[in-house]
Length: 350
Image (cartoon, rainbow, N blue to C red; front, side):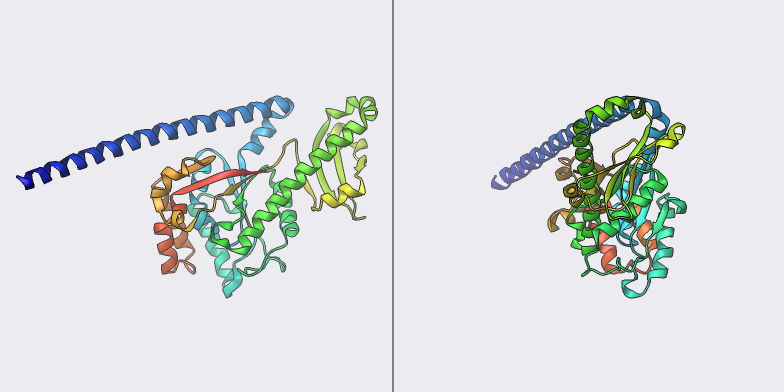
């Protein structure tokens, strides 16, 4: 009799657990649909805003919006941490560019690792023409070395200008693994965004102080093609206002900033063609979540942006296998158990 009661109790608990999990799945599905709907709505509002603000350059804006630059520190970073983002972005119709800031020559395998990076990107459908590997004396592959953010921001600016990109994806301030090179990349991108915001504020303040001049030159304002910033030969920071081909004779007009403003803005040349640069960071999680693998998905739903699929593990193993010199046993375990194999959660750097 007691045994029968025990069986009934077990049956009740199993049934309760089954329906509980079913309800949890339904709630998760509804929540995910709401997040997707909200994200799509925000993207549509952003696109509509861009179209309204730059109505005369729709084709150019579309070109900018369809490109994103992934900035990493070493070959294999893209395969170990960013697979969900890369695959999802390409699937959404974006062209992914990769700027790798070192050849990964810490153990003397820089030449091999560069070749492996191209093989990995080929698997991920990133064309070789979209890839640049930097070899700079001040940016060595060293876990104990912090890189100069200004050097990195200068390199990023040139790449953005060359390929006409206004979106960046990189690490956050903890660098996922805590690697100092990873963190330095974040600091450089953050410097770029802060500098851009500082210039916008200075321009706004300067324009308010020069309303009379602006009123006399209203016929020229609509011709501006970009607002950029650079460090001149005289070590003064200046704002350049460059107009279109029909008004090239006015291209020599520069607005000198105050000395105090110069100290706030320390960056090399960067062009922003009718657009502001937006940067996104890959979230670092605690050690428990980091190795929860696919089970971290419910927690990750509360992030601003999420890319998730169980199928990402296939791309991760293929891409990491291309990095043959680095795909040792503990990295195989990392790919198998890491959440970054299945899930990327992002937020905007502001």
